[in-house]
Amino acid sequence: MEPNDQNQKLQQTKNNPTNTVPIRVHKDIARAIRRDLAKLNKKDFGRRISFSDYVAKAISKLTDDDKHELQQASLSNADKLELLFRQQAKTGDAQFSKEQFLGRLLADFTASVTQVNQPPNGTEKEQE
Image 1: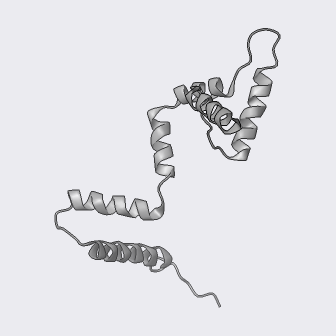
Image 2 (image 1 turned 180 degrees about the vertical axis):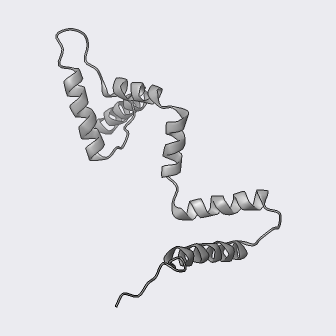
Image 3 (image 1 turned 30 degrees about the vertical axis):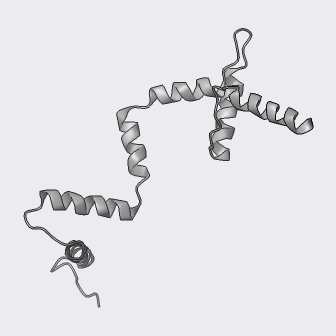
């Protein structure tokens, strides 16, 4: 009868709904939140402020600019290049292949680098 008892326990566990889920965060972030919560909970009265309360308040303070900044920070250089290519494809007069787009981008970059590295005419004087 032991296997039957174990099945009942598993079913009870599965049927027991919970309002919490595990969330993964970096150790340093979790440590900073715990430190803040410890400071916030040093009070004489009232219930303890939970991790959930802390995160919910932080989420409510996020602005659209903050969200956009987080999205931009998540982009790799390859992602940014792809976005630039797509933007050019939508607004550009002529349609370029990705290879042509990269060639044009490199040419522009090379021209700007060589222009920056060359001193203006007439400023170089030989000292003797």
